[in-house]
Figure (cartoon, helix red, strand yellow):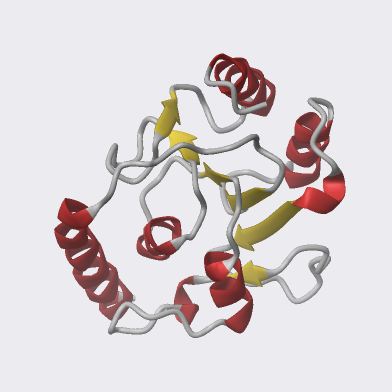
Length: 172
């Protein structure tokens, strides 16, 4: 437990140093593919969130979802790839091939659906090849291009605000 705390501290410190080298986004085209990074420890309605996204015209096949859980449940349904902080090495590298595939995939939009800073979630968000990143305002402002101030449990408000501003930005 204590070693995990130290590991998370050092990974967060390394990430905060690398935030100085962030680039501004260039022109992003219309949003067609979405990457969804969800902290399933705090939010259990992932399928309802995906349904809300598809209600705005995004095809379900264009939504790639990956879940973070503090602890794995052996009886849990494996509908989506799941990872935990054990996949984060001391050097800040991620050992899960599923997570690395998610990071290297070029999404038009990455939705970081978590409101508590955890080292592995910040690392995935930072390293993602997504062109436009959206998240909660409680997370470090340098990670996302657009932040929405709402509660994690209120996914309908989050999705409606997201698409309202995506329409204003000519992304949909």
